[in-house]
Length: 382
Image (cartoon, rainbow, N blue to C red; front, side):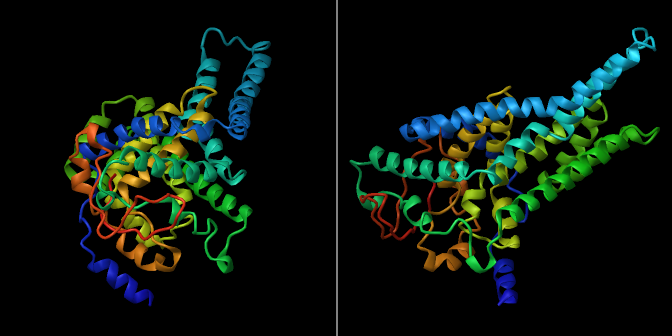
């Protein structure tokens, strides 16, 4: 059976190159703003429960800032103690040490981003926020097109997706601590590679080539040989600090997107190869969406709140880049057939004002309550 699945994947008409093109990235960035605006229109986000969660999020943001500042404070106290016996004013090396540690924490290890992402494994709030927002997106769509021909409207996403278990097959269900451990392992691996590359860049003679080489290796797979060569050439002249920030922004945006899509993938459980192909076909849009929110997450204290808005906005994104799910009984065929983004070209060429343009849903009617499960068919970008 696994061999047949691999053959089916190989026969699919998937793109041979990445979907990482400027138009797709721009459309993804536009979806950041449109999705956030749509999410903030949802009155359900402002219930008493969500106000409490918002207060907790702000408190968590303050706690995160305090946690990541502890090493810096400790080093400052140590340097202050040393200054009683050593003259540090002439060399300024103490300031360089503190600034270097601060840069490593925020730009190399991305500590605030890590702690915000880890909150998903502590509380189910983000998962509920995604599903509530998906319900809101469906209802908004019906309201917007209530005077249109029902046969011309898309199918709903929320009614069927809510029927899927967020924990997958009970026989293979992971315990929360196992999922958290897997996340820590992924982050630890990325952090270790980032630190190794950063410190190797200080080696004499060859150090100045380490970061440009890492840039070339990364973007050659993502955007192709010629753009990667251009990035490599530019990287030779960029200061180390800005090059590290550039690379980490790229990797962190991709990681953020994977975390934001977790409520969807925890229900629609693609295998490893299917998920890889799913991401490849949508890579440009996902990167544009992710990098937009990654920049906003840098806002002090409000980062955790913005993370919640990003999760809610991802529900809107899902309705643009994939098909509405069928009932769980048809999940296997859906996973196989939804890897390719069928409406990619049409969606990327839409004017910004027409992002909510509706399309024909073959043989389905959506003039029903979104609480009623229904079959999903047709190509969806509305």
